[in-house]
Image (cartoon, rainbow, N blue to C red):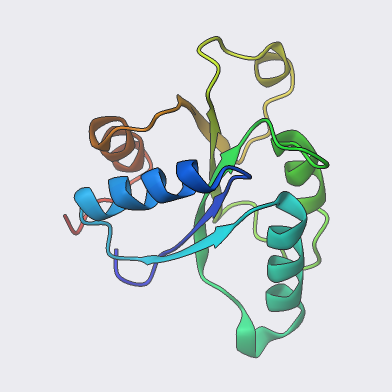
Length: 139
């Protein structure tokens, strides 16, 4: 998908590098942006949605669940409050190093949260998840 934008939001720089390498390995052709915190990503998106000439084509957010200051769910709460945010377009994939499904996800999963993946990511897991949301049609 050449015009797709994917955001990686993870406080761990090693995890961000691994995620980028996985995307390269599966030949993801969209634009990838990295953020070390949810607040950085919220600022970026709010700026872009406020100015139609900068409006991003953000389709996918790979979001770490456990981050300091703003966890993944707090990010989602702020994301849907951004004026102009398109919850029908954006798909969020929650990431975590934990191997069990958080109770919070099963109790209050927002509609834009499409999957939960455990780290470390593998090309197979990523490709399967992106295929489920019809992002890999050009691979």
